[in-house]
Image (cartoon, rainbow, N blue to C red):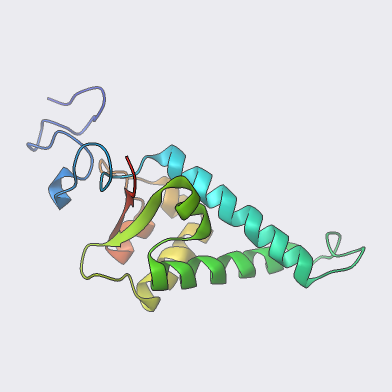
Length: 149
């Protein structure tokens, strides 16, 4: 029988998100919640927006038909490179979370690109399992964890 804090808890012997991966219930190393993840994504998207605006400097940059695609491209590169190399984006660092690989010590370029592409599609990131992992994390065999308590 599940509990209110963790609807899937109890049925399979797990009491908190990430327990099956050996993650603690709270504090550093625990599975990151949706709110922190969304806030980090927002910070990264705003950073991509700023960089794109600087890149397309000019009075009509924001009105350009290609501006939204430029923002997406900048965000994609910023996110994929940062996750592949460091396990976290600037927004994740600000919010105290990071992407952890369930296979090895680093996420790596191919899995970071797959994960980022699926986030860009939005729906895979919203369809989450009991551990808070979206389809993008499941496909890349990753989990987002807290870096501080």
